[in-house]
Length: 377
Image 1 (cartoon, rainbow, N blue to C red):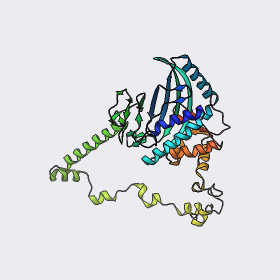
Image 2 (image 1 turned 90 degrees about the vertical axis):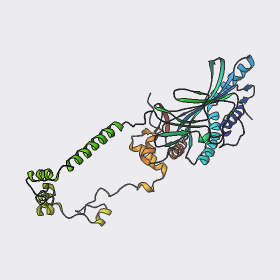
Image 3 (image 1 turned 180 degrees about the horizontal axis):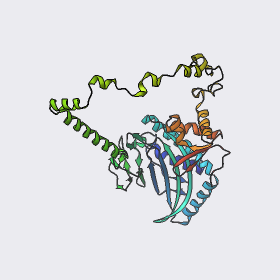
Image 4 (image 1 turned 30 degrees about the vertical axis):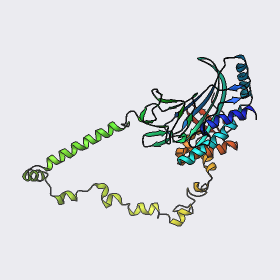
């Protein structure tokens, strides 16, 4: 078994050690003479429930043999990046599929990367880092984000730590078990730690539960309450005073009812005979269905494109990309076609494999484009 296979198995067994996987515990990263000393798991959860995951295996370069072995591994990863990435992605998709079955939530794996580097932490370390997007990792309900069910029961050995972070503007609502440390937007558990069923669980909510339009609603409610108070105050006056007010209005109820806006009168809303004759009779249902207008000429429906319901998912994405000028954010597909993020990811992945679209990261967004469209510098 070559070192690429060993690394891929070791890394993916990391998450398979959870309640949704198959392994009992996390094995160390072992590739010939290279053995990991520390494992760092980090998941940055986004507002839509997706998470950017990173898995780091850190090797202390404290002797010449270990340093040479890691440098050899680093060169191999640089020369065969695609092989490492493909093997890891394949195994992670199996892990995510198990989590999808356990949670009943659509999930997908996207944007897998791998890199080997050295880092001067507390001493010199070699680091093998895998990163990927876990679509559908957390559950989003109303204004709350709940994470952890996809890795419920995960085991952390003594050299492993797990950090879950959340978007800016959110605060902790529920966290179980209590983390070993907390940052402004993160919770960290250090091994050894064996999470129970339903753990870890992290629920966050907006720091200010009042949405941006809340003040406007407050003003409207206040105004409405004032109007109700004023109405009750007026209707609570003595009958004689109310009668005086009605009499001073100079008209009876019947007279008031006779006053209608001009737009409602037949003369104002009905077309004249000359106008009706000039416009012609309305088109029949048969004419409309055939794409003809009232004069018998071809109307705007003639030669209409294939109905959307008859298009395949891939054709719908390509058509939408064409409408957007050949470049758009992947989340636009999700919004415009009313799909889940996982379904969008699967369809886009199929198109990418067929070479019909390409994708790249722009900040925190996935951007789709046709292959012949150049990326911005």
